[in-house]
Length: 403
Image (cartoon, rainbow, N blue to C red):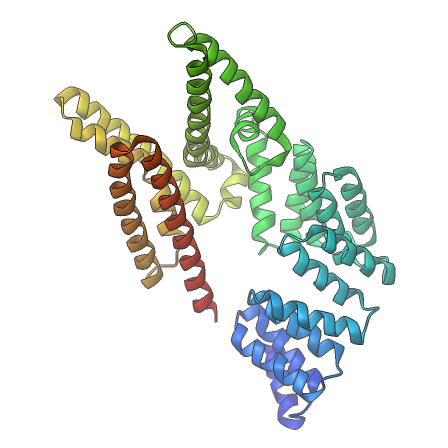
Protein backbone atom coordinates (compact mmCIF):
# COMPACT_ATOMS: atom_id res chain seq x y z
CA UNK A 1 0.00 0.00 0.00
CA UNK A 2 2.85 2.41 0.78
CA UNK A 3 4.42 1.70 -2.61
CA UNK A 4 1.10 2.33 -4.37
CA UNK A 5 0.74 5.64 -2.50
CA UNK A 6 4.22 6.76 -3.53
CA UNK A 7 3.59 5.81 -7.18
CA UNK A 8 0.31 7.73 -7.23
CA UNK A 9 2.06 10.75 -5.75
CA UNK A 10 4.62 10.49 -8.55
CA UNK A 11 1.85 10.26 -11.16
CA UNK A 12 0.27 13.42 -9.78
CA UNK A 13 3.54 15.16 -10.72
CA UNK A 14 4.27 13.20 -13.94
CA UNK A 15 0.91 11.93 -15.24
CA UNK A 16 2.45 10.78 -18.56
CA UNK A 17 5.23 8.65 -17.05
CA UNK A 18 5.11 5.19 -18.60
CA UNK A 19 7.34 3.74 -15.90
CA UNK A 20 5.12 5.03 -13.07
CA UNK A 21 1.95 3.67 -14.72
CA UNK A 22 3.67 0.31 -15.10
CA UNK A 23 4.79 0.29 -11.47
CA UNK A 24 1.25 1.16 -10.40
CA UNK A 25 0.04 -1.96 -12.23
CA UNK A 26 2.73 -4.00 -10.45
CA UNK A 27 1.58 -2.62 -7.06
CA UNK A 28 -2.05 -3.49 -7.78
CA UNK A 29 -1.37 -7.12 -8.78
CA UNK A 30 -0.73 -8.50 -5.26
CA UNK A 31 -3.93 -6.83 -4.10
CA UNK A 32 -5.88 -8.74 -6.81
CA UNK A 33 -7.18 -5.47 -8.22
CA UNK A 34 -6.77 -6.89 -11.68
CA UNK A 35 -8.99 -4.55 -13.67
CA UNK A 36 -7.28 -1.48 -12.23
CA UNK A 37 -3.91 -3.08 -12.96
CA UNK A 38 -5.04 -3.71 -16.54
CA UNK A 39 -6.00 -0.04 -16.94
CA UNK A 40 -2.65 1.08 -15.51
CA UNK A 41 -0.70 -1.26 -17.81
CA UNK A 42 -2.60 0.03 -20.85
CA UNK A 43 -1.81 3.61 -19.75
CA UNK A 44 1.89 2.69 -19.48
CA UNK A 45 1.92 1.41 -23.08
CA UNK A 46 -0.03 4.45 -24.32
CA UNK A 47 2.51 6.75 -22.65
CA UNK A 48 5.48 4.95 -24.27
CA UNK A 49 4.71 2.22 -26.86
CA UNK A 50 8.46 1.49 -27.15
CA UNK A 51 8.88 0.60 -23.47
CA UNK A 52 9.64 -3.08 -23.06
CA UNK A 53 8.82 -2.88 -19.35
CA UNK A 54 5.34 -1.50 -20.09
CA UNK A 55 4.56 -4.43 -22.41
CA UNK A 56 6.08 -6.87 -19.89
CA UNK A 57 3.83 -5.46 -17.15
CA UNK A 58 0.80 -5.73 -19.44
CA UNK A 59 1.73 -9.38 -20.05
CA UNK A 60 1.91 -10.05 -16.29
CA UNK A 61 -1.49 -8.50 -15.75
CA UNK A 62 -3.07 -10.38 -18.68
CA UNK A 63 -1.58 -13.64 -17.43
CA UNK A 64 -3.14 -13.08 -13.99
CA UNK A 65 -6.47 -12.35 -15.68
CA UNK A 66 -6.29 -15.65 -17.64
CA UNK A 67 -6.06 -13.70 -20.90
CA UNK A 68 -3.63 -16.00 -22.71
CA UNK A 69 -3.82 -14.22 -26.06
CA UNK A 70 -3.24 -10.78 -24.53
CA UNK A 71 -0.39 -12.07 -22.37
CA UNK A 72 1.43 -13.70 -25.29
CA UNK A 73 0.98 -10.64 -27.55
CA UNK A 74 2.36 -8.32 -24.86
CA UNK A 75 5.33 -10.50 -23.90
CA UNK A 76 6.35 -11.04 -27.54
CA UNK A 77 6.35 -7.27 -28.02
CA UNK A 78 8.44 -6.84 -24.85
CA UNK A 79 10.95 -9.41 -26.15
CA UNK A 80 11.06 -7.69 -29.53
CA UNK A 81 12.02 -4.46 -27.81
CA UNK A 82 14.42 -6.02 -25.27
CA UNK A 83 15.38 -9.54 -26.45
CA UNK A 84 18.08 -10.15 -23.83
CA UNK A 85 16.01 -9.58 -20.68
CA UNK A 86 15.83 -12.86 -18.73
CA UNK A 87 12.73 -11.74 -16.81
CA UNK A 88 10.84 -11.40 -20.08
CA UNK A 89 11.96 -14.83 -21.28
CA UNK A 90 10.88 -16.28 -17.95
CA UNK A 91 7.38 -14.79 -18.24
CA UNK A 92 6.98 -16.13 -21.77
CA UNK A 93 8.07 -19.55 -20.54
CA UNK A 94 5.71 -19.35 -17.54
CA UNK A 95 2.73 -18.55 -19.78
CA UNK A 96 3.60 -21.49 -22.04
CA UNK A 97 4.06 -23.78 -19.03
CA UNK A 98 0.73 -22.81 -17.48
CA UNK A 99 -1.04 -23.64 -20.75
CA UNK A 100 0.64 -27.02 -21.22
CA UNK A 101 3.20 -26.03 -23.87
CA UNK A 102 6.10 -27.54 -21.96
CA UNK A 103 8.63 -27.75 -24.79
CA UNK A 104 8.17 -24.07 -25.63
CA UNK A 105 8.40 -23.29 -21.91
CA UNK A 106 11.67 -25.24 -21.66
CA UNK A 107 13.13 -23.36 -24.65
CA UNK A 108 12.06 -20.03 -23.15
CA UNK A 109 13.60 -20.82 -19.76
CA UNK A 110 16.85 -21.96 -21.35
CA UNK A 111 16.95 -18.85 -23.52
CA UNK A 112 16.65 -16.73 -20.38
CA UNK A 113 19.50 -18.68 -18.77
CA UNK A 114 21.69 -17.97 -21.81
CA UNK A 115 21.36 -14.26 -21.15
CA UNK A 116 21.53 -14.55 -17.35
CA UNK A 117 22.97 -17.92 -16.22
CA UNK A 118 22.13 -17.33 -12.54
CA UNK A 119 18.49 -16.34 -13.14
CA UNK A 120 16.72 -18.29 -10.40
CA UNK A 121 13.21 -18.10 -11.87
CA UNK A 122 14.34 -19.47 -15.25
CA UNK A 123 16.28 -22.22 -13.47
CA UNK A 124 13.23 -23.26 -11.48
CA UNK A 125 11.01 -23.28 -14.53
CA UNK A 126 13.57 -25.28 -16.50
CA UNK A 127 13.57 -27.84 -13.69
CA UNK A 128 9.77 -28.06 -13.69
CA UNK A 129 9.75 -28.65 -17.45
CA UNK A 130 12.45 -31.32 -17.19
CA UNK A 131 10.48 -33.03 -14.44
CA UNK A 132 7.40 -33.00 -16.66
CA UNK A 133 9.40 -34.89 -19.30
CA UNK A 134 10.57 -37.41 -16.69
CA UNK A 135 14.15 -36.10 -16.40
CA UNK A 136 14.06 -35.69 -12.62
CA UNK A 137 17.82 -36.12 -12.20
CA UNK A 138 18.66 -33.12 -14.41
CA UNK A 139 15.78 -31.17 -12.88
CA UNK A 140 17.18 -31.77 -9.38
CA UNK A 141 20.65 -30.77 -10.54
CA UNK A 142 19.25 -27.51 -11.98
CA UNK A 143 17.48 -26.68 -8.71
CA UNK A 144 20.58 -27.55 -6.68
CA UNK A 145 22.59 -25.03 -8.74
CA UNK A 146 19.87 -22.43 -8.17
CA UNK A 147 19.99 -23.09 -4.43
CA UNK A 148 23.77 -22.73 -4.46
CA UNK A 149 23.34 -19.30 -6.09
CA UNK A 150 20.52 -18.22 -3.76
CA UNK A 151 19.78 -20.52 -0.80
CA UNK A 152 17.20 -18.09 0.61
CA UNK A 153 14.68 -18.29 -2.25
CA UNK A 154 11.58 -20.17 -1.13
CA UNK A 155 10.44 -21.35 -4.60
CA UNK A 156 13.70 -23.24 -5.13
CA UNK A 157 13.22 -25.10 -1.85
CA UNK A 158 9.58 -25.73 -2.72
CA UNK A 159 10.41 -27.23 -6.12
CA UNK A 160 13.33 -29.23 -4.70
CA UNK A 161 10.93 -30.64 -2.13
CA UNK A 162 8.55 -31.68 -4.89
CA UNK A 163 11.34 -33.47 -6.78
CA UNK A 164 12.51 -35.19 -3.62
CA UNK A 165 8.98 -36.34 -2.85
CA UNK A 166 8.61 -37.67 -6.41
CA UNK A 167 11.83 -39.63 -5.89
CA UNK A 168 10.54 -41.10 -2.62
CA UNK A 169 13.02 -39.07 -0.52
CA UNK A 170 10.41 -38.15 2.05
CA UNK A 171 12.69 -36.72 4.74
CA UNK A 172 14.60 -34.60 2.22
CA UNK A 173 11.32 -33.31 0.82
CA UNK A 174 10.12 -32.52 4.34
CA UNK A 175 13.26 -30.46 5.01
CA UNK A 176 12.95 -28.42 1.82
CA UNK A 177 9.23 -27.77 2.27
CA UNK A 178 9.77 -26.69 5.87
CA UNK A 179 12.52 -24.29 4.75
CA UNK A 180 10.29 -22.94 1.96
CA UNK A 181 7.54 -22.29 4.48
CA UNK A 182 9.99 -20.57 6.82
CA UNK A 183 11.10 -18.25 4.03
CA UNK A 184 7.54 -17.61 2.82
CA UNK A 185 4.88 -18.45 5.44
CA UNK A 186 2.16 -17.42 2.96
CA UNK A 187 3.06 -20.06 0.37
CA UNK A 188 0.08 -22.41 0.10
CA UNK A 189 2.04 -24.77 -2.18
CA UNK A 190 4.86 -25.10 0.36
CA UNK A 191 2.37 -25.78 3.14
CA UNK A 192 0.58 -28.37 0.98
CA UNK A 193 3.93 -30.00 0.20
CA UNK A 194 4.81 -30.11 3.88
CA UNK A 195 1.47 -31.80 4.64
CA UNK A 196 2.02 -34.25 1.77
CA UNK A 197 5.49 -35.15 3.04
CA UNK A 198 4.12 -35.62 6.58
CA UNK A 199 1.46 -37.98 5.23
CA UNK A 200 4.02 -39.78 3.04
CA UNK A 201 6.02 -40.70 6.13
CA UNK A 202 3.37 -43.39 6.68
CA UNK A 203 3.91 -46.55 4.63
CA UNK A 204 0.18 -47.26 4.26
CA UNK A 205 -0.48 -43.80 2.78
CA UNK A 206 2.38 -44.17 0.29
CA UNK A 207 0.98 -47.52 -0.83
CA UNK A 208 -2.55 -46.16 -1.27
CA UNK A 209 -1.31 -43.01 -2.97
CA UNK A 210 0.76 -45.04 -5.44
CA UNK A 211 -2.18 -47.26 -6.34
CA UNK A 212 -5.17 -44.95 -6.42
CA UNK A 213 -4.05 -41.40 -7.13
CA UNK A 214 -4.59 -41.21 -10.90
CA UNK A 215 -3.01 -37.72 -11.05
CA UNK A 216 0.34 -39.25 -10.04
CA UNK A 217 2.02 -40.32 -13.29
CA UNK A 218 4.94 -42.04 -11.57
CA UNK A 219 2.95 -45.17 -10.78
CA UNK A 220 0.82 -45.56 -13.92
CA UNK A 221 2.70 -48.72 -14.97
CA UNK A 222 2.14 -50.24 -11.53
CA UNK A 223 -1.57 -49.45 -11.72
CA UNK A 224 -1.85 -50.88 -15.24
CA UNK A 225 -0.09 -54.09 -14.18
CA UNK A 226 -2.37 -54.40 -11.15
CA UNK A 227 -5.48 -53.99 -13.33
CA UNK A 228 -4.23 -56.63 -15.80
CA UNK A 229 -3.54 -59.07 -12.95
CA UNK A 230 -7.00 -58.46 -11.46
CA UNK A 231 -8.67 -58.90 -14.86
CA UNK A 232 -6.79 -62.16 -15.42
CA UNK A 233 -7.65 -63.50 -11.96
CA UNK A 234 -11.32 -62.49 -12.24
CA UNK A 235 -11.72 -63.94 -15.74
CA UNK A 236 -10.17 -67.21 -14.54
CA UNK A 237 -12.55 -67.34 -11.57
CA UNK A 238 -15.60 -66.42 -13.68
CA UNK A 239 -14.68 -68.96 -16.35
CA UNK A 240 -16.18 -71.61 -14.12
CA UNK A 241 -19.57 -69.85 -14.21
CA UNK A 242 -19.71 -68.29 -17.72
CA UNK A 243 -18.35 -68.72 -21.22
CA UNK A 244 -14.69 -67.62 -21.67
CA UNK A 245 -15.50 -64.55 -23.77
CA UNK A 246 -18.12 -63.36 -21.32
CA UNK A 247 -15.79 -63.99 -18.40
CA UNK A 248 -13.08 -61.73 -19.84
CA UNK A 249 -15.60 -58.98 -20.64
CA UNK A 250 -17.22 -59.14 -17.21
CA UNK A 251 -13.81 -59.16 -15.51
CA UNK A 252 -12.74 -56.07 -17.47
CA UNK A 253 -15.91 -54.16 -16.62
CA UNK A 254 -15.74 -55.14 -12.94
CA UNK A 255 -12.09 -54.11 -12.72
CA UNK A 256 -12.63 -50.70 -14.33
CA UNK A 257 -15.69 -49.97 -12.19
CA UNK A 258 -13.95 -51.28 -9.07
CA UNK A 259 -10.87 -49.15 -9.70
CA UNK A 260 -12.99 -46.05 -10.24
CA UNK A 261 -14.89 -46.69 -6.99
CA UNK A 262 -11.61 -47.33 -5.13
CA UNK A 263 -10.17 -44.07 -6.49
CA UNK A 264 -13.23 -42.11 -5.34
CA UNK A 265 -13.08 -43.75 -1.91
CA UNK A 266 -9.38 -42.85 -1.70
CA UNK A 267 -10.16 -39.20 -2.42
CA UNK A 268 -13.16 -39.15 -0.08
CA UNK A 269 -11.73 -41.07 2.85
CA UNK A 270 -8.07 -42.13 2.68
CA UNK A 271 -6.61 -38.63 2.34
CA UNK A 272 -8.97 -37.04 4.93
CA UNK A 273 -8.24 -39.92 7.32
CA UNK A 274 -4.48 -39.28 7.14
CA UNK A 275 -5.15 -35.55 7.48
CA UNK A 276 -7.08 -36.35 10.65
CA UNK A 277 -4.10 -38.33 11.97
CA UNK A 278 -1.87 -35.27 11.41
CA UNK A 279 -3.97 -33.39 13.93
CA UNK A 280 -2.22 -35.50 16.58
CA UNK A 281 1.19 -34.39 15.25
CA UNK A 282 2.61 -31.12 16.64
CA UNK A 283 3.88 -29.87 13.26
CA UNK A 284 0.91 -31.33 11.41
CA UNK A 285 -1.55 -29.31 13.48
CA UNK A 286 0.21 -26.09 12.50
CA UNK A 287 0.55 -27.07 8.83
CA UNK A 288 -3.07 -28.09 8.23
CA UNK A 289 -5.29 -25.46 6.67
CA UNK A 290 -8.86 -24.81 7.75
CA UNK A 291 -10.03 -26.49 4.52
CA UNK A 292 -8.04 -29.66 5.28
CA UNK A 293 -9.36 -29.81 8.85
CA UNK A 294 -12.87 -29.42 7.46
CA UNK A 295 -12.31 -32.23 4.94
CA UNK A 296 -11.11 -34.56 7.68
CA UNK A 297 -14.06 -33.70 9.92
CA UNK A 298 -16.59 -34.13 7.10
CA UNK A 299 -15.17 -37.51 6.09
CA UNK A 300 -15.11 -38.94 9.59
CA UNK A 301 -18.48 -37.42 10.43
CA UNK A 302 -20.03 -38.96 7.31
CA UNK A 303 -18.60 -42.38 8.19
CA UNK A 304 -19.98 -42.22 11.74
CA UNK A 305 -23.36 -41.06 10.42
CA UNK A 306 -23.42 -43.77 7.75
CA UNK A 307 -22.53 -46.41 10.34
CA UNK A 308 -25.37 -45.28 12.59
CA UNK A 309 -27.88 -45.24 9.73
CA UNK A 310 -26.79 -48.66 8.53
CA UNK A 311 -27.13 -50.08 12.04
CA UNK A 312 -30.62 -48.54 12.28
CA UNK A 313 -31.56 -50.06 8.91
CA UNK A 314 -30.53 -53.53 10.13
CA UNK A 315 -32.10 -53.24 13.58
CA UNK A 316 -35.40 -51.69 12.53
CA UNK A 317 -35.51 -53.37 9.09
CA UNK A 318 -36.03 -50.05 7.29
CA UNK A 319 -34.39 -49.90 3.82
CA UNK A 320 -34.77 -46.11 3.76
CA UNK A 321 -32.06 -45.84 6.42
CA UNK A 322 -29.80 -47.92 4.14
CA UNK A 323 -30.34 -45.45 1.29
CA UNK A 324 -29.59 -42.55 3.65
CA UNK A 325 -26.40 -44.35 4.74
CA UNK A 326 -25.20 -44.44 1.11
CA UNK A 327 -25.96 -40.72 0.76
CA UNK A 328 -24.05 -40.04 4.00
CA UNK A 329 -21.00 -41.90 2.65
CA UNK A 330 -21.03 -39.74 -0.50
CA UNK A 331 -21.76 -36.47 1.35
CA UNK A 332 -18.10 -35.28 1.70
CA UNK A 333 -17.98 -34.68 -2.07
CA UNK A 334 -20.77 -32.07 -2.32
CA UNK A 335 -20.13 -30.62 1.14
CA UNK A 336 -16.41 -30.24 0.41
CA UNK A 337 -17.18 -28.39 -2.84
CA UNK A 338 -19.74 -26.11 -1.17
CA UNK A 339 -17.58 -25.20 1.82
CA UNK A 340 -14.59 -24.40 -0.42
CA UNK A 341 -16.54 -21.37 -1.64
CA UNK A 342 -16.44 -18.12 0.36
CA UNK A 343 -19.37 -17.67 2.77
CA UNK A 344 -22.40 -15.81 1.49
CA UNK A 345 -23.78 -15.68 -2.03
CA UNK A 346 -21.01 -17.77 -3.62
CA UNK A 347 -21.62 -20.61 -1.17
CA UNK A 348 -25.38 -20.37 -1.83
CA UNK A 349 -24.81 -20.67 -5.60
CA UNK A 350 -22.53 -23.68 -5.03
CA UNK A 351 -25.21 -25.40 -2.94
CA UNK A 352 -27.81 -24.64 -5.62
CA UNK A 353 -25.51 -26.01 -8.35
CA UNK A 354 -25.02 -29.25 -6.45
CA UNK A 355 -28.76 -29.58 -5.81
CA UNK A 356 -29.43 -29.29 -9.54
CA UNK A 357 -26.63 -31.78 -10.23
CA UNK A 358 -28.27 -34.27 -7.86
CA UNK A 359 -31.63 -33.88 -9.64
CA UNK A 360 -29.97 -34.32 -13.06
CA UNK A 361 -28.10 -37.41 -11.84
CA UNK A 362 -31.32 -38.90 -10.40
CA UNK A 363 -33.20 -38.37 -13.69
CA UNK A 364 -30.34 -39.82 -15.73
CA UNK A 365 -30.18 -42.79 -13.36
CA UNK A 366 -33.76 -43.59 -14.38
CA UNK A 367 -32.70 -43.50 -18.03
CA UNK A 368 -29.72 -45.73 -17.23
CA UNK A 369 -31.98 -48.31 -15.58
CA UNK A 370 -34.45 -48.21 -18.48
CA UNK A 371 -31.78 -48.48 -21.23
CA UNK A 372 -28.92 -50.42 -19.61
CA UNK A 373 -25.89 -49.69 -21.81
CA UNK A 374 -26.71 -46.49 -23.70
CA UNK A 375 -28.43 -45.02 -20.65
CA UNK A 376 -25.35 -45.62 -18.49
CA UNK A 377 -23.18 -43.84 -21.07
CA UNK A 378 -25.62 -40.93 -21.25
CA UNK A 379 -25.75 -40.74 -17.46
CA UNK A 380 -21.96 -40.68 -17.13
CA UNK A 381 -21.43 -38.10 -19.89
CA UNK A 382 -24.33 -35.93 -18.70
CA UNK A 383 -23.22 -35.83 -15.06
CA UNK A 384 -19.58 -35.24 -16.07
CA UNK A 385 -20.56 -32.39 -18.42
CA UNK A 386 -22.72 -30.71 -15.79
CA UNK A 387 -20.07 -31.17 -13.09
CA UNK A 388 -17.42 -29.57 -15.35
CA UNK A 389 -19.73 -26.65 -16.11
CA UNK A 390 -20.45 -26.28 -12.38
CA UNK A 391 -16.73 -26.03 -11.57
CA UNK A 392 -16.17 -23.48 -14.35
CA UNK A 393 -19.03 -21.35 -13.05
CA UNK A 394 -17.60 -21.44 -9.53
CA UNK A 395 -14.17 -20.37 -10.83
CA UNK A 396 -15.74 -17.57 -12.90
CA UNK A 397 -17.61 -16.26 -9.85
CA UNK A 398 -14.39 -16.23 -7.82
CA UNK A 399 -12.62 -14.27 -10.61
CA UNK A 400 -15.49 -11.77 -10.69
CA UNK A 401 -15.11 -11.23 -6.94
CA UNK A 402 -11.33 -10.78 -7.30
CA UNK A 403 -11.83 -8.16 -9.97
